[in-house]
Every structure is written in C-alpha cells, then in structure tokens.
Image (cartoon, rainbow, N blue to C red; front, top):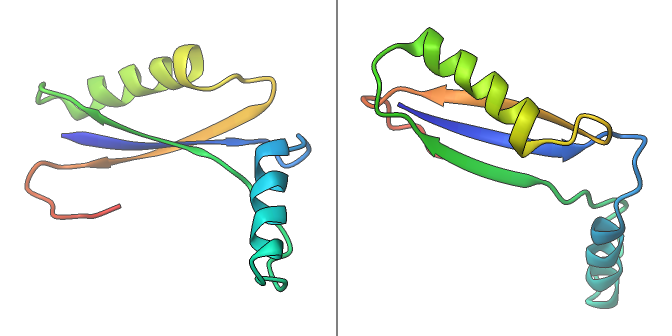
Length: 87
C-alpha cells in the first residue's frame, strides 16, 4: 500500500513562496493567474497488510512529523497495491 499525503498552508496563512511564483508567472505573461499556493506532496510506502493500522500510523505521522498544526492542514489518500491510481 501507498499513501499520497498533501500538506498545505491554512487559508489564513500568508504564502510568500506562492507569491514569488505568482509574480514570476505574471512576468512571463500569465496575467490571468490570480493566486498560487505552494504545498508539499509526500508519498509513503507501507509494507504491512493492515489498512486500519496504516491509517492510524498516517494520522500520527502527519500530525507529529509532516504538518505543523498551527499553520498547515493535511489530507491523504491510501492507494492499494493492485490499484493503478496515479498522482
């Protein structure tokens, strides 16, 4: 099993990296871009068979390691080994 984890800044938190990307896009002529938010994508591979255990581990990993709960939120999608889901 794998998990695709997405960590994003809370909407109320300023995103200076996103602003920098947006200004770069505007300078390249993409004037219709009104906002850019930069996020993190993490792929985690799990070698066990217990989906509920994996989900519990993911909750702990996300809340304790991957995301700062003061400024970030996260969500994830578990992908079974026999699935061919892409990012």
